[in-house]
Length: 302
Image (cartoon, rainbow, N blue to C red; front, side, top):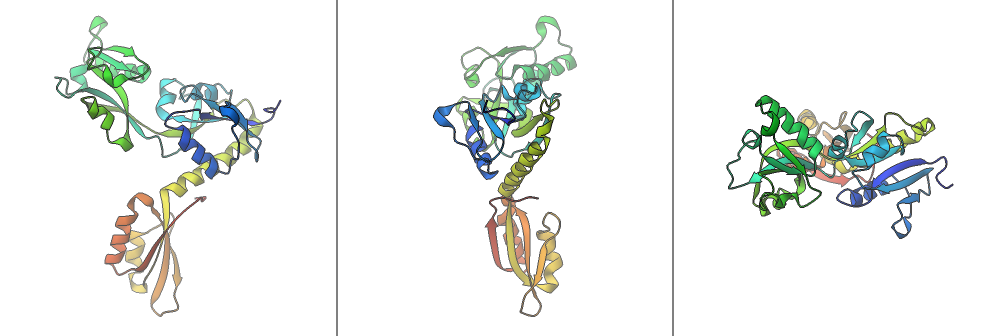
C-alpha cells in the first residue's frame, strides 16, 4: 500500500483555498504530481501523501485522526463543531473572510436586535444558530418568537430578494470589499466572525511517530507565510541618526547595523511588514536615509 507509513495531509480539493494551498506547498518544497485530478497523491521528497477533500470535511477527518494535518477555514472548523478536537497550528494569511449578518439596504432591519425573531438564511447554520441564540436569550425571545435559522447550500445572497428571508448570514471576502453583497442590494449590520485559512492537526493523533515530520512541515509553512508578510529593507544613514532609524525599522529583534567605508555612515538592514513598506520608506527619507532598497523574500525561518 503506497500510503503505509506516510503522513496524511488534507488539502481543499477546490474553491477559494485550493490554489493558495498549492502555492504554499510549493514554497515549503513539498513536491508532488497529481495525476488526472485524483484525490490522493504521494509526495516525492517526503513520506507524505496528500488527500484532496472538500474544505468542509477536513476538520472532521483531522479531528477524528483519519489524517494528520489539514488546511481549511477557521469558520469551517467552528461550523463542524471540531474546535475541541483539533489544534490550529498556524494562521496562513489567505482566504480572509468576514461572516456577516446582512439585510436589504432598504429594509427596516438596521441591527441584529431588529432582526431577532425573524427569518435568517445561511450556509453557516451552526455558527448563526449559536449567535442568534445568544441574542434571543438576551431579548427574552422564546418558543415561536425565536429567530428562525434556515440552511441553504448556495446563493445565500438571493434569499432576501426572493422573499425567503429577512436577513442572511454570509461570508464576505475581505479582498473584494463587499462587491457581491452590494450587487445583491444588501448591507452588513453585524460581523459574527473573522476567518482565514489555518493549518490544523489532531488533538488525538493516531500516528504519534509522525510528530517530528508534522513539526518540520509546520516550520516550513510558517517560513513561507512569514516570507509573504515581510520584506528586507536596506538603506544608508548617518550614524547620529541611527536611533531615529531604528524606531522606524526596528525589525523583528533588532536591525542589523554595519559600518560603511565613508566616515560617519552606516548601512542598516531590517525586516519590514510588506503592507507598510511604502510608508516606512517615506519616513526614512524624511530623516535623511539614502539608497533605500527593498527585497522580497522567497522563504525564511523567523
